Image 1 (cartoon, rainbow, N blue to C red):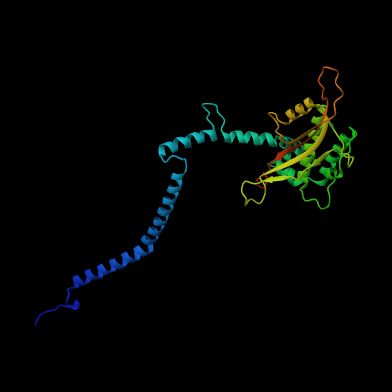
Image 2 (cartoon, rainbow, N blue to C red; image 1 turned 180 degrees about the vertical axis):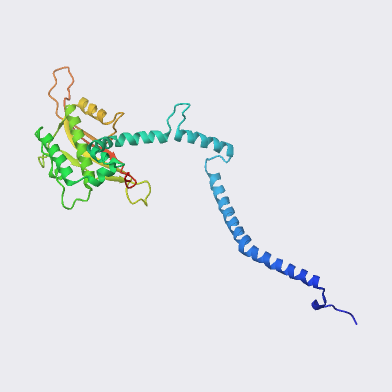
Length: 302
């Protein structure tokens, strides 16, 4: 008879070795299922996406050489951030300067008008302005503006001087518009330009156009920049009009002119052998002011 050993006949040491091998196999299977397999799936997915992106990159005009890309990156970083050694301003700094110029007009007036709020240890004058601007402030400024226009035999529309019950714009934004119109009117007078009256209404040819809000992301709940366009029609020489536009765009302020229409009056008959001279024109233009609202709520100082 042949002898066929069974498991029970194995020595104890061999049985322990079998147990250890079985446990290691089970542990390896579990480890591979729970850890290695997810990693492998992720790797294969990323590898496939990388291959797709690589094919797309090859179809572009960008070089695939890392050294060349690093050179481009360095050059673009210099364009963005500037170079102090070469004394070149970067696009980021130029953008900040333009933003400061475009909003400096309101910043000055807010700090002056609400200086008392600053004395009460308010961190930011803009917060004081937005929180404390009232209908009384608006009415006070509207009366000032009304007197200035009346002194030139001009009447302002009630849409500019009054706040309706259904007014949707915040009061502080309406005050910003009055400040802007007052500044424009004073500069027009300084440059010998006359605001004309609208033949239909008899009021001064001045109107506040709908405000425009700009956001950096479509998901933003509030605009990060407000534009307040104003439409004005004046009469005067083209030289004075150009001089007025120069006052709107200088090292201190930036009020871009968005639209311009020039109408000439019929010239007088020129003497024989001389050119006709257009002395005065009627100019209608839209010019905008900008305001950046504060991004965070005020923090009270102790």
